[in-house]
Amino acid sequence: MLELNAALTGSADYLFCRIDEAVADYRAAHPLARLISLGIGDITQPLAPVAAAALRTAAAEMASPAGVRGYGPAGGYPFLQTALAHQYEGLSCPVLPDEITVTAGSKDALGGLFALFSPAVPVWVCDPVYPAYRDCALAAGHRVHTLPCRAENGFLPCPEEITEPGLIVLCTPNNPTGAVMTRAELQRWVDRALAGGSLLLVDTAYAAFVTDNSLPRSIYAVPEAHRCAIELGSFSKSDGFTGLRCGWVVVPEACGCAGAWRRWLGSHSNGISYPVQRAAEAALSPTGLRQRGRALGVYRRNAERMLDFFTRRSVPCTGGENAPYLWVRCPDGGDSWGWFRRLLEECGVICAPGAGFGAMGEGWLRFTAFGKNAATAEALRRMDRLF
Ligand code: MLT
Image (cartoon, rainbow, N blue to C red; front, side):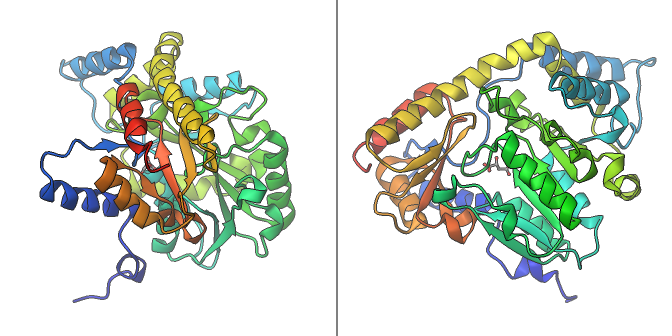
């Protein structure tokens, strides 16, 4: 047997696979259990009608002799790059269409972004962290350093803790804690990156959940960020695309790695399917943005209801405002996998144990607001006894 990549064999399985496995075992033993998932952040609301119509039209187009299409451009069709650039213009964060690459989603783009840099370049991730950042960086051969995000710091990392230049991965609104960075906080990161020669990789997959207009929805709200920041975006959560797969990456020319990114893309991607890109374009249209509001409203109601539930019980928690995740202290402050199992067995509720997001996550649980309203309300009723 050839030697396998130690980053894949030497660590526990991906968090959400471990959760699926634990739930599958429980279901096998309790086939009649009515479980409610507040675990993985997967959408429950349908696609916007205008996006679904665009999918159908594009599929019909491809089925006609005049509309048949083969490989698309690796970076994405210009119509979607332009629609995305228009969105950035609306945020007063101008980005050129050419700097935008359409991807299958953030996770799929991460491996490519880490591959652009020598394994000698370290990667800095938060702790707790969305585990895909850490796993993809390790699989690409990088050393990974962690930036502790503590309650006393609003669960935000500190730029002063960067002791060696590298790739710094940030996520705002944050998965898993729901913490959101202000413009001043992002500015500190840009200043740090420019001063030390680091590059920021900023995941804004949850930007659509920001309702407070004083909070930035893109790193490019900070002047000079084009020189030191790559941004990832996604249609997954805002537009119900977790099953369709579409996102984007902005790699500004001024970052110095746009050529390497094009080189990587040329040999690793044949682009995202035409119907999916047409659906994404429709999701960004004025009608699409209006229709997206319905699903976001459902998720926001869940977040408010959960926040109210924990706050009334004086359970320490954060997130849920401008973010679809709540980060909640385990009732006795202890073992998060133990609490995951208790909630599963005693309430039929699936959450995500904080320890799966890093050592600093121990003692915490993550709840997602992506459920249906009635199911989320029922989950809270069931958990009443334990919190
Ligand atoms: C999450 O629940 O953190 C994400 O939705 C899972 C993922 O995107 O892999």
